[in-house]
Length: 439
Ligand code: XLS
Ligand code: CA
Ligand code: CA
Image 1 (tube, rainbow, N blue to C red):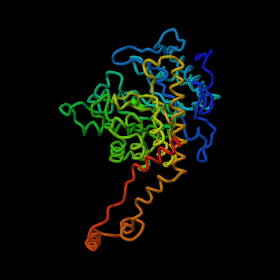
Image 2: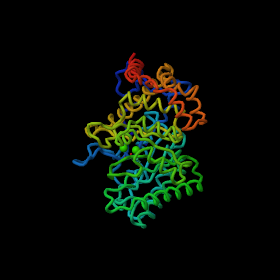
Image 3: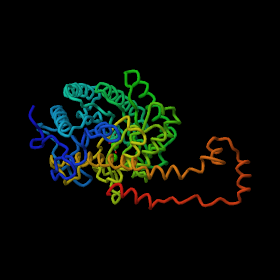
Image 4: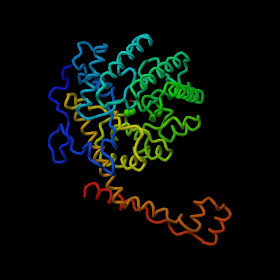
């Protein structure tokens, strides 16, 4: 098989002083940070859809990038195979060990699901063949239940029982494929699981049906040997106005309410967290404190645009804060999937590689800086001290849960009025953060 990305070498680590745009400046796979190799801290994944399928079209114009990868005709099985070849060469050149996919990213969807499934069997045989002799694995699989017009009213939340059954068939197949490819996780991203207006929506009915679809997926997945995590990927809006998996807190509440919390974790996408009005690190923390930090879709949005721009992450402040959360949580059970796309005018093959180099370097730098913050200890110490009033006296009784409203009230009466609770020191802490980043 001939080389597809001609002229692109294997991307090597050259260090922060390098001016070679096709080299890593910070991602040094074997470098040990806090006792673990960077490659273990940062299991990066390629997103099949953006990298191998999307050509940069937007609402106002067609694509600018050509993703034929040498195939004569797009939308054919030959093209699907060319994408596999391209994907594996791409991952090898970057040293990426995982990929993520939707069913319809890897084959052209046929009119009949039986035919689509046949194509899926064929292409996954081909992918398996390519995986042999490499250490590339599937991070997670999923079913695209949002692009086809049949899903205009949702998949698990649809008003049509036939569409619901069709969605179930897609989930079943996508689970089988994920197991076949050794996937670590299975994602539910509910892009159309939501609504535009309550005037035409039975919210409770729809949410119950989504939960039932997830329950059936867990039952079936476990029955065919899927031992990994199911994930919900929260997103507040886009394409729907109100999406049921608004943010991590909402999705976790939903999972707990339906007894799904043992099988599910969160796949947190940075751009979705910010669309929900949170920071990326906020949704990571909410997931972590609930024991549900599973995987990450590593990208970033643009605050001036306010939609899901899926940019390659370059914001080192955010990556540092995210990696601090990941380190504190003891790592991810999943990985870092670059659900990111080049900007429309970045249409060349070099741009594809530069996007990933940027993303990998940003997270590597984030890891180095987050580790430095932990080793420095001043931020952690501040937080520890901030709550020190709970270490003795009445505070300890509160922590031990051995007091009562009556006792606290008489304590307060005796005290008169408490002192102010102490400075939050935000500016001081931000200065420390900058000192560690740039000092
Ligand atoms: C879209 C989502 C989607 C999921 C997988 O906004 O990010 O790509 O990651 O269905
Ligand atoms: Ca997104
Ligand atoms: Ca995503």
